[in-house]
Image 1 (cartoon, protein in one colour):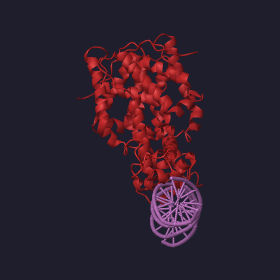
Image 2: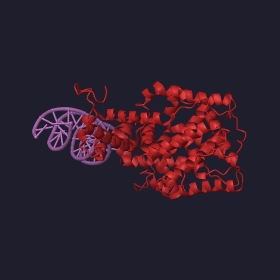
Image 3: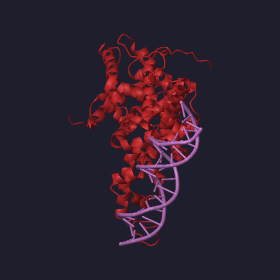
Image 4: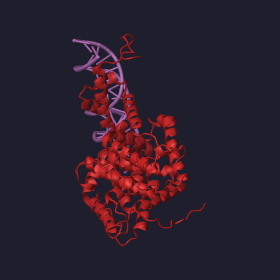
Length: 225
Length: 225
DNA sequence: GTCTATACTGCGATAGAC
DNA sequence: GTCTATCGCAGTATAGAC
């Protein structure tokens, strides 16, 4: 099914530009709404309004609400997989962990809505995500903790419970996306700037690496103040 | 308005036992539902069903859905205030921070639903909580970070950005309540036991305190294995 | 392929019998 | 004070004109 195959069967149709554009418009709008109100709390009309389309139109692109939601989740998981490379035993623990924290913070900064949809789904009980957990993720996760165990066994870092460390990094970085409103209200400032994020990232790296008995590597100061 | 005042005016009525019981039943049921589906995603009928009451009955105890939600939030904030004492400059940083982390983890273990309602509300944009943030909380929060600053200035701990440290503790402990389903699916085990929580708590204390340049105090091993 | 009109369901909330 | 019946409305989804 290449892009240049002649349009014959309806299924194989490579979906016109307008269709793809509208699908994206809808999914972007849906992401915003789902991030704020979760699956049940979101209405198709709200999504339609945000996408600038009549609500009946959504059913032309997505068979139903659940289908749209699943597509949004699927796109999120793709983004996710792209964003975080895998750790390797050969890596230097300090720079590998720092890189991981940095990548996660960058994700929180660039895709806060995506992170929120994910958070909502998990808090709601993972009904739509459980299939995903059963597949590749658990393997990917074990591989990650296994690397940490190897590092500890080799004396490269303090004997930290790998699971706890991964959870710590997960939660502390995700926090800056999911609870941005909490941060905004507590600090009494506007939304965090790129610079704020950089500082928070460096601080987290310092804290966590020191917590693991590691010294943070020289931070790549591309900054321009 | 004591408990023994004669029943005269309707407002001052000390609200019969049954009424108080039913209110609690409803609020408990509501907490479960709100924790799972957020404000918009929760229906009054679902709450009624869980509480074992006809849905019209809820409107007898709470004027409307928003009112019920706000009451649930208010009860949560009370619990919150009770749970976490305030830090003092005189305290020993290590044991004070350890105590704080322990208190938060204990809260996550005992009140996961409460934590989830709170998380949902924040992710949804804090529309109902913003008034709370404007009042005492910000002061309470500043006082807390100020103590950290004092400790750092006195050379009692490493120069960590206080805000980041508080956020780190907030997120890493809240994680065990809000993302319990994620943990369950990743670890492929049942719900975390009390013992699991104790281990996670100790691990977190180790990691965070070392990250702050502190040595964890001897942990109060009341355990009985 | 796209929009308008509408069917049908379940929601929050209320009226009124008891 | 409590329950049954029901209203009005917003929700998802579809039918059918164009």
